[in-house]
Each structure stands twice: as structure tokens, then as C-alpha cells.
Length: 332
Length: 181
Image (tube, rainbow over all chains, first blue to last red):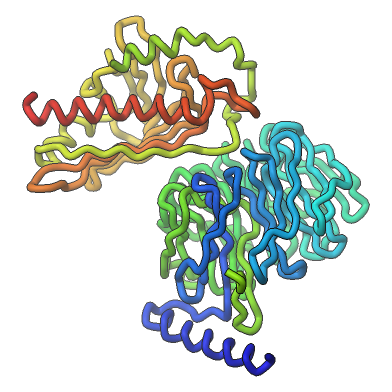
């Protein structure tokens, strides 16, 4: 078996070289995107190295929220229409657990070490705290109005929620689930992400900017103007990237001094955005175009596009990088 | 035809809609794309529909008033059906003569008039068959009822049906105008 695995790894790298190099793109060691297609109620699994959809699995209830967790070998989806959160195996893409929640479950983030999953309730100003294994409800955290995006610190020490209708970010201490701070940001923050320095970036849909917060001091570090209706934020090569839903662009700014570095044309209504852990690729999901755009974060060029199902949202962390050329969804 | 639709929608008076924070919306954004082939050169079709300040080509629109021409952030108010008819307020956020395309969003409309929220739209003329044009009208929007479990007249289906009717009426009129019938 180890031999087989090694062989598959080599073949996969070789194939990647063949397919990506002529286009000038970076070869990637097994990166996959798990894209929730809200309008077709399914999920596309994209091989970013070979630039193709390798599988599409049904996910009932118009899924939007996504959280891929390599340490848990799982990905989680949230379907607001059927109010269902699901856990799937990364290895087989089969459902391992599912739970129905009250209210308006929307965003999701996972803290692998305490083994918790957090789901925002858009209609009831709270975050559900779930056991990440069986998705049973452990507790609730009180947020501001219409909590949307969620993010967890890399070391698992806090959770942040973008409370859209309260124009604030709430930060909670983990694992003790206590409130650390509520921080006023721009108007209608929706997406939220953590940069490599551990700072929170909240994308304000209403003011077309991003509020950068230091979660330790709980102070605002910067407010950065970006394109129209920013939804998500990702980070690579010392830069931040936002999806500008109304501009059909991804805006770029530097993480050192937050200076704008222009914008990149992508598909229509870009929403979800995430980076490969090796920092070689940034991927936006384009809700109207039914595509993802592959961005080289060094050259700031779009180097490829892959088709998806209808209405790719992918709100959350949606990229999974495998070590040895393993392919997810092996049983498919 | 559209004014009848609007009248019908107006009858379903919406006391159900409680005051909600501005911009609130339901869980799933909807999208539609309608196209029609028009037997006229793209430049001729664009000459008719390419002015953000003149929506008179649409049979449901009684009058257009606005400011800012075709510049970004230009505004217009469409009055529907008759002089004192219901209105839709819109703002222009993309405009390209070269691409023959403009994008706008609704800043104010009553859900009794059009049962949508967070509505944005693109109108584009492309080269079509035999020297003709392909006119494409796309919309992205949430349903009119911003909370869980919407009433039937404000659910996702109602939103799609209403926007489809608006686009179809406009595209049908364009087709008729250039077909000489």
C-alpha cells in the first residue's frame, strides 16, 4: 500500500506538471476546492492542480456555508433553506453526521482541537456551538444582529463572528466560550477571515472596505478601501484578496502597510475566496458565472477557470491540500 | 401586461412585512438570464436601450426621470403604468459603450411592486445571428420577504416569476420593435 500511494503521488505530480506548466501556472501538490453550489443544491469537488471537477455530490437545502478541516479529515456544509448542517468525510465524501438547527443557520467555522463546530444563526443573533464529531448542540453564543461569517484563530484560542446588522465583530474566547469583545466595524460586515499574522479581516459590504482587527488588543489596526460589495477575504504571498461582488473583481492589498495593490477581473458576482495552504493559488467562486477563477497571487494574473454547479457560494474555508497526492472522495 | 401584473401584485397587500433592517434578505440569492434575438445591428439596438435615463422602450415604464446621465452613480426613477403609478428607484454602477452593457441596482422599490430585495441587473447587447443582435438581461436578487418561512407571494418563486415577467415584457417589446410588428 505505501508503494501504491507513493506511485500515485508521483503520477499526480507528473500529471500536474504536464497540465499546468504550458499554461504558465504553478504546479500544485494536490489541492482541492469544495464548492457549495447554492442554486443547484450540490457541491463541486475541484482538482485545482489538474483544473477539473472530479466529483459533484448532492447537498440538499441550498448550501452556502462551508468549512474544510484537514485535521478532522472532514468538511462541513450549511444549508439555510433546509436548516441543516452536515459533516462529510474528506476521504470518501460520504456523510458522517447531519443535524437540523432552528432559525437561519448560515456561516460555519471549525476549531479542530477542542473539536467544536460553530454555526451562525442569521435570524436570531447567536452562534450555535456544536460537537464537531456528531454535530450535537453543546451551547450558544450571543452575537449582534444577523451573524454571518465566522473565523477561528489558527491556534484555536478564539472565534470571531461578523454581525452584519449590528455593524460589529464579536470575539469569543476558546475553549471557555466567553465573550472577549464586540468591535464596531464598517457597515454590514459579512465575510471574515484570519491573516497569517493572526489578525481578523472583516469585509464590510455596505462601506466597500475591510476592517482589520488585532484580536489580542481588540483594537482596529486599519480600514482598507476595496471594490464594490466585498464578501470574502483570503491571504497569500503577503497580500490580502477580497471578492468584490458588484465589481466582478478581486481587490488586493498588502499585509505589511495595507496599501492597495489594484484589482483583478474575475467572473461575475465573486463571493467565496480562499487560498491554498502553500500560498501558490487564490481561488474565487463566481456565483453568477458558475465558475471559479484561479489567481496567481504573485503575478496577480488569472491563470485558469473551472466550471462548477449553479450558484457557487463557498462561504468559508473551502480548500484542502493533500500531502502525498491523495485524492479526496476515493469511493466516488 | 406588466401593469396588470403590478396591479395584481399590489392587491396582495403586504401587511405581513414587518419593519426590517435595511438590506436584510432571505437565505438564497436567485438569478435569472433572459435573452432574445433581435433582427437589427447591435449599434442600432444599443441606440434604443443604451441610455440609462430613457427606459421608454419598456412597455411597463410610463416615464423616466434621473440625474447623472450614464455616469457611474447616476440615478433614475421609473414610473410604471401611468403618471401616478408606482415607482422604482435605481442607480447605475457599471456602464460600457464599448461592451454595450450597463449594470444597475434598485435602491428603492416596494415589495408590492416588485417582490425582491437586494436586486441588481445587467443589460447587454451582443452580436447575434445574420448581423442581428442578442440582447441579454440578467438579474440577481433575494426574495421580497427577508425572514424565514416566507408567505407565498413573497417567496423565491414569486421573486423569480415577477422579474422574469419584467424582462420578458421588455425583450418582447424590443423584438417587436425591430421586427416591424
